[in-house]
Length: 253
Image 1 (cartoon, one colour):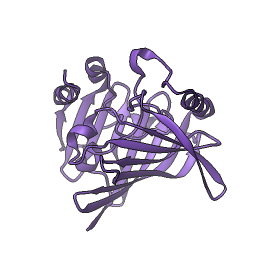
Image 2 (cartoon, one colour):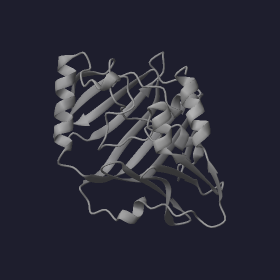
Image 3 (cartoon, helix red, strand yellow):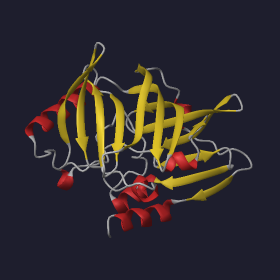
C-alpha cells in the first residue's frame, strides 16, 4: 500500500528525524580519528553556506505501508527552518522554527501546535526540532560515541562521504511504531551539505528515507518566512510540557 500525501500532517511531522546534538561533556572527539577529521572537513565546507532551499522528500516504510511526502524547505543560519506545502493551490507554512519557538500547522485538522524550544532544551538538553534534517547543521541528534565515517560513494560525477551512527532518543523514538536503531547519512563531498538520510530498525530494515533535491545554495531569503502567523479560526495548543515529559521518560530521567 502506498499513500502519497501533498503535505506533511501531524503524523509525518512527528515521525521525521535527523541531526546531531552536542557531544557528551562538550567533547568534540568521537573516539575515532578518521571520523573526527571527516566531520571537521564537512563543517569547514559548510562555513561558506549561510542559507539554502530544497525539496525535502520523505519515504516511510513501516507496518506494511509506505508513506511518501514532498515539501519545500528553506534553511538559514543560525537555526531558522521553514517547511511549506501546497494546500488548495497555495504554499502554506506547515512548520516554522522562529527563534525560541517551533510552530507546527496542520491545515486539515485546523490545528497549530506550539513548542517552547528554549525551555525544552534547558530541561532535556535536546532540540525539539532535531527530527527535521537541517543540511546547514547536520551534526545534531546522534550519539557521538557511535558515529563513524564508513567510506565514500560515487553517484554519477558526484562523490558522497558516508557516516553511520546511533540516533539519540527524541520525539521520533517515542512516536514511531518501530524504534530506529541506526542512521546512515550521505554528505556531498564538495560542499558538505547533507544529501540523503536513511534510518534502519534493529533487523537492518530500511524504515525512513529522506532526500534533498533541487538544492540552491545561499539564496536570498525573505525573513518573513520565519515569522509564523497563526491562521484565523484554528485551535492552538502548547505541547511544551508534554514534550519535556516524553523526552525525560525516554532518557529515564
